[in-house]
Amino acid sequence: MKAFVVAGCILLGLAGFAAATNIQYQFSSSGDYPGAAFTFPQAVNDHKIAGYYETSMGSFGYLEDLRKPRNGRFLNIEPPGSVNAYASGINTKGVVVGGFCGPTACNPLAADHGFTTATGHTRRLTTLRLELPPPLTESMAWATSSAAFARTAHGFLDSNGVFTELDFPASQDTQANAINDARAQWRATTSFPIPASTGFCDI
Amino acid sequence: MNGTFVTVDHPNTGATSLAGINDADVIVGVWSPATGRLPFKGIPVRSSS
Image (cartoon, rainbow over all chains, first blue to last red; front, side, top):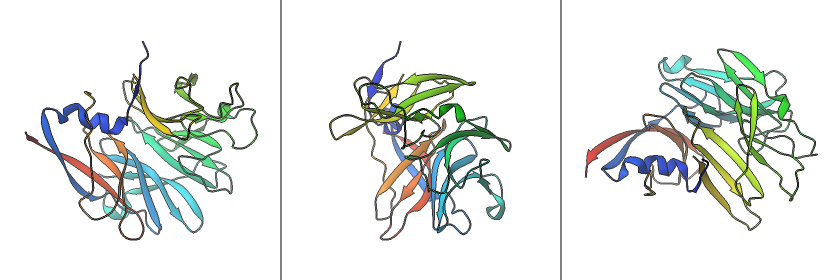
């Protein structure tokens, strides 16, 4: 049974053990993509980080293998047909999800297409392109459409090519940003008709 | 999950934004110095309360 929990799920994840322990973090640089102006890590599994970096030419996805030496740990992610791209999620199998665009720079809040990739094989999620004029179909876990009730974005779950829509009740927009291995808990944000955004988990 | 929120701030001055967390609770994000944004990872160090 679905239950939506209004919360910041990253913080909820931390809170799971916060009651029994004090938690502190040992911080270190996760690494800058060579030559990039900015590097934005978006997701991490046991040994890889997925994200995007920005240069004067736009934004681009990357995969960082923490097991490799500093000078050879970054891999550029360039889906076929992309000019700009980003990676926003990675699971324990190393499958990366993200989005990409044409000449317009994009980031996790704006993209034309979603993609998944693993071991160098990229799959375009072209089935996500819907009918509504710009803004075009969004990236790995949300889509834009002209559905009723002035809804402008839907969350979705891609399970082996089977897409299931995910919409937070009464929201104007729903955006699913990440998923865990159990595929039971998502992290996402919504934009309600009132000027507010709310994080939620779909458990 | 029990609804308790834990604030996580990078020890250096500036804003902290978290983007991802894995099953070992390693976090990644960016923190903002006076200019620019810098990527970081955080490894949890737990201690008894």
